[in-house]
Length: 189
Ligand SMILES: [Cu+2]
Image 1 (cartoon, rainbow, N blue to C red):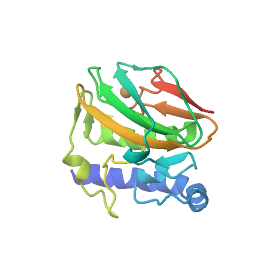
Image 2 (image 1 turned 120 degrees about the vertical axis):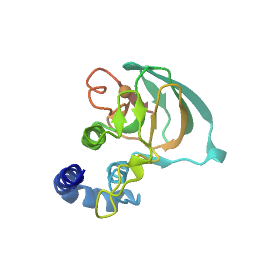
Image 3 (image 1 turned 135 degrees about the vertical axis):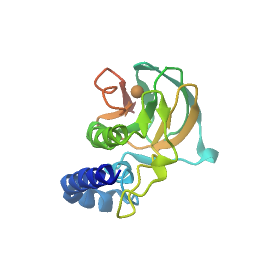
Image 4 (image 1 turned 45 degrees about the vertical axis):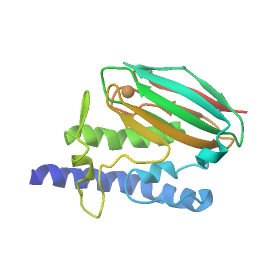
């Protein structure tokens, strides 16, 4: 167990070191507060912000399958606040995550670590293990406002206010799923 935790810390350090410098600059520009671990990816681009329920003007239902999304692509307006109602209709754990291609790539490293530590096992999530301290207050919690991670049959919700962003995508960053086609374009008009 000790070696696993240490390995996790080393992986986390590498991720933080490689991502650190660039993110710091972007975090200041975007004005989105960053905290430990995963949350840095949510702040990596000024792509909008978590929305308020009172400002929702449209609800979009998204279903997740093995391994694709329905609908395949999304079109939203600059400044629009959308409620996404997400259902996992597949047989595996899937994620719905709003971000740029670069953010998804970074998040895939985090999710690989979740698999390596047995937190994410095919069709199951060990939610108590996700709370475990990895050192330096880091956890494998998956609680970014731009993302939900769901077991088969589970439902989740994201409310997001969009800003005009190049190359915005929704994606599942469970290892291999993005590459298998679990990604779609979000065009912001
Ligand atoms: Cu997936």
